[in-house]
Length: 192
Image 1 (cartoon, rainbow, N blue to C red):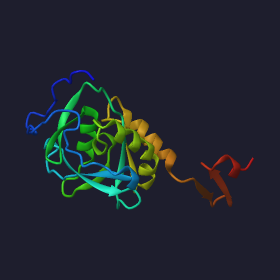
Image 2 (cartoon, helix red, strand yellow):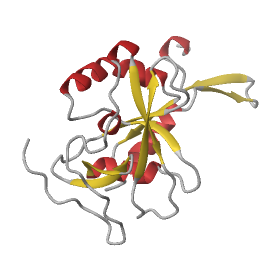
Image 3 (spheres, helix red, strand yellow):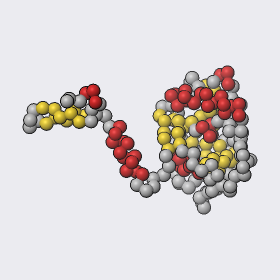
Image 4 (tube, helix red, strand yellow):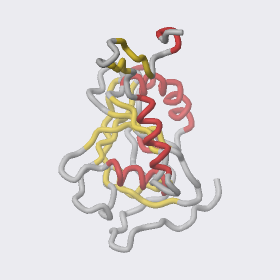
């Protein structure tokens, strides 16, 4: 692992106390036999530029309560910044920090599973075990949030198109002719 470039911060952002990377968040050991996972609570902040703060909770995979899972583009691993995890500085990619800023609520916390925060990246054994559980982690989430990055170069147009594709198919009635026009139905339901 190479040397990390200096953390990137907003000019008004506080600098967290850092104890280095990796493993700076002081992870509580997981019991692999109990199929435990960690869920991060993303704490609220009124201002977008406020430091990202999370706390970790260790829970059994079969009963972790409601949480969301984040799937995100990692971005450039050399572009890193600090967030607070359990009160300690933790280095994350700039892409993850941007996702957390956009996902953070102003007035309430949010329970979310994020691989690079909820898995101790300095513990190879834990990482291997948690990767085997990821299918169950994503399946158990109340919602999976996908972060592709901030809007740029008209990318919202593409997202709007995908959203339009996800709209349930509809049958539109033409009352002047008295027949149904079928549009946007799966091929087996279309009339020839």
